[in-house]
Image (cartoon, rainbow, N blue to C red):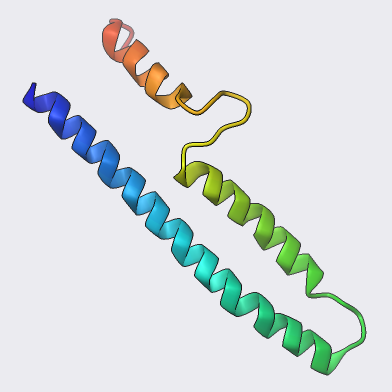
Length: 92
């Protein structure tokens, strides 16, 4: 029973760390991209700022999906189901 509590605590701690990391990434995005947009506006007429904004934005969406356990292909609880499956079997 204690092992199960420890496992659940570690999973919760990992989840909180992932969410905290996502918010840090989001805050950095919200600071850097406007700075790059200002720099782009002041230096050239070509809107190059869209490339880092879109690229980083895609990565940010992936980070969000990981932090909240969202997976449109495998489903939300896929990881937990697989862990339980391997823990119940003797494959490891």
